[in-house]
Length: 122
Image (cartoon, rainbow, N blue to C red; front, top):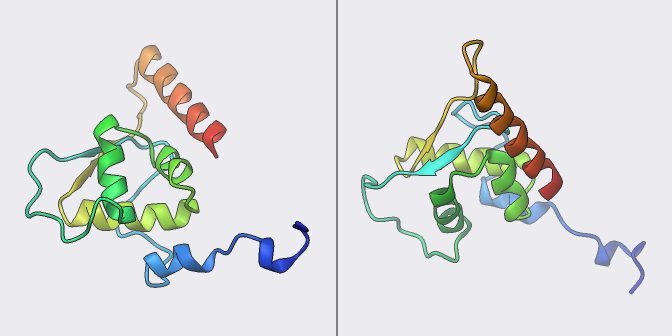
């Protein structure tokens, strides 16, 4: 297999079909923001756990960052943001705020660690 062969190159078309071509999330989602699954969603999801939305909800039990979710599912960051934003507005996920000026040294260190793990995973 020749890596220069266009047929062997990964396609970005499929991920963008997941968002119906949308590239912006309705929710502010910094790449380092932790995301978690809500214990009581408004309704049972209509998708299977094999669906990428189900995979995102499942991953968010561990409170990963937006970047970690994108890396784990091999999705472009923009696609992950749109899908996560949809799940937040539908009541399946919660996004935690990132640090402000009053953050402690330990909170800043944890944020740096999560960000580095997310970047390494990309």
